[in-house]
Length: 110
Image (cartoon, rainbow, N blue to C red; front, side):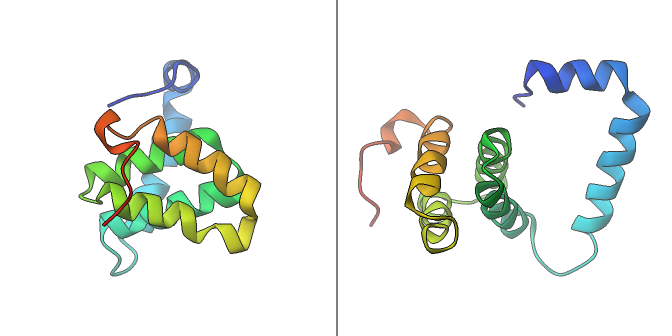
């Protein structure tokens, strides 16, 4: 699993804080009926809204790992357009393209 260097550094320096953060995430994930794929697609959308490059990249990867298709990830990005605006959606689209397999980058869905 890919982890940014800053996050690895944080894990090394503050393992108790990191573990508490992970525990809260686990409890939230278990609090309702949404499956892991759906949770990461939702978190991808929230990350787009926040303009969080790291969050977008992380949740796109994690959604794919949880069984989302590339088309589902891209549609999640596209759905953000009317909420966050075209420039923010395009930024997120670029961040997601960085984590998609190369063969998926230049084909249209469908």
